[in-house]
Image (cartoon, rainbow, N blue to C red; front, side, top):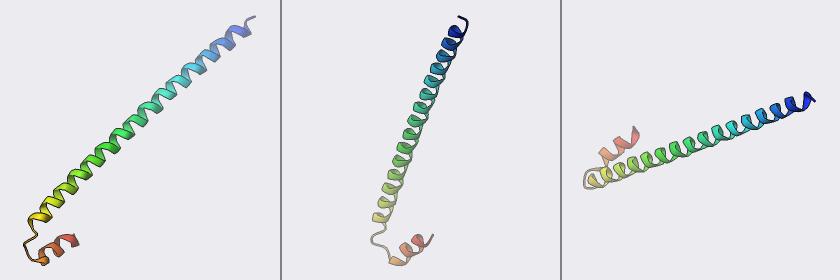
Amino acid sequence: MRARPREMVRLLATLRHSAQCRALRAAAAQEAVRLAQQEAEEEEADQAERDSTSSGEAGTAGAGTRHRRMH
């Protein structure tokens, strides 16, 4: 009779561990999504800044633009 309670304890421990792992994976996935969204927003902001900067220089000579693109 002692084997059954031990098996039940092991089963419950396994289920608890599985639930903890699922929670950790979900948290990691949410963090990855948050970081990806943050990077996308930063990239959009950088692109908008580059677009506004390049449109402000539209009347200048092309040499300045070529120099900037080389770096």
